[in-house]
Image 1 (tube, rainbow, N blue to C red):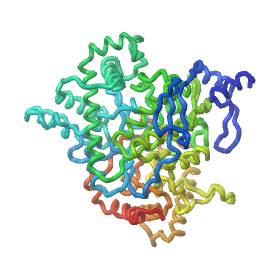
Image 2: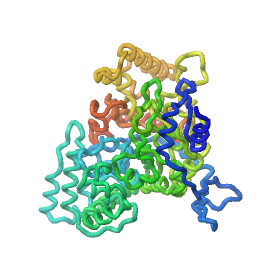
Image 3: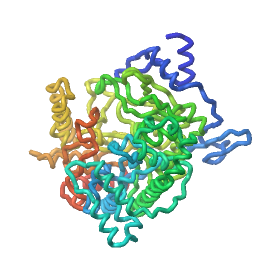
Length: 595
């Protein structure tokens, strides 16, 4: 590679090589490095300094110095998280007689209040763009700074309670029927119509950030859900045409600000109604067509897509279609956009789970007109990013969990643990990597898992307990034509099942002649032996539902994020299968300590 280009790339934090999953050095094409540097633009200086607390630093927090420097003092380590058991919830999948075709904030409140859990992790509940079709993935929100009004319980708004009988009856007639699969467009259409009937029409107090978000929503209703296709003079939030449109659409701007106030109220009610610690999930990024990509475009690289390099599971790499932060612009902004995102999540939570926390250290940038395997890593100031995350958690009195599954450098997990951030452990993945006698290495006994971790059997992207036991993941992917070597994949799935049954036997947890429900409970008992502070299961795992919420590598081929639970909230918690699975975790944490 040209030495000048190499030196420039190093100065800007752009990798010219990377280590693949097999720990082999891969050189990045010069063309890719140039394309990434072009998208970064000229470097922007920063007057922000981020330091870790020490004897010579000011108190924790944000300080403006006389020379114009902003000094951010971050905690050395967050407090230790108390051991607990709990749930991982896909909120949309919950349902009750009062919810309108999708789980809502009231379902979340009732579930957390009745479950007896110590912690409840909730999928991202961040904002959609209010235009059809509604984006279904909670991991590609329109904004990470605002909430999703599709989760509002209409009948629990003050406006519904105060409405006259005729209006209330009209609203109730709008409720959609519960369907086999969640129909986001139908749900949003019904809830929008009901909310428009109930809206009092009064002006709403707004911060600058809320004003811009509500303006985006109003413009999206008029011009469509992708701001990149709007008239050119509306594509920047600070343009004169946007100011004129905001005045013209003042009613709709106020309406969308009001929806956010309703979300704040109902999210606050969830937190106030339970002793469980509510942990909200933070996605890696945002929809490039959405509100944050429009409002924060100066600190993003809007033409770049975040993804992952090729590995054994995705030989062509992965394209997540999310625009990344520009490292220099984010620092020059005092990291305020990042701070706003963290604060918005923690406003109504006791904790935050950061999806792909390695993204605070580096992200795989895919430049325009390149496939996912033609990208490179761009590095961030990890001490600053992780430090600010810890500072915001400290200010909110919250815990932090990082999702560090897959191919993640050891230094990422080490840095997390040093700051008091929990890592993630999954039964399917935890192996004794120090044992070089077998390929793959043997499963690691749960008693040897990391203590500072949130542990589970599976995740929303992996087979459920029943799905794993049946090989459902292989069957579904084979039917969709996503597997080249079906027989080989089936054999590997059977080997994994046999290996897991052997682990149950070694722990004295394998029943004689077990049924599938027996094995589901046994897997929960095995999880209960983990050293990790938090033990979590999902309703899908506890029930023995074979359908996983999301099948990576698919969009419309599989009903991702659309599968409701087979039982309502009350029936779910009373189900004997669920109670047996939960008892294994509750008993393991009944004395409040890890083994």
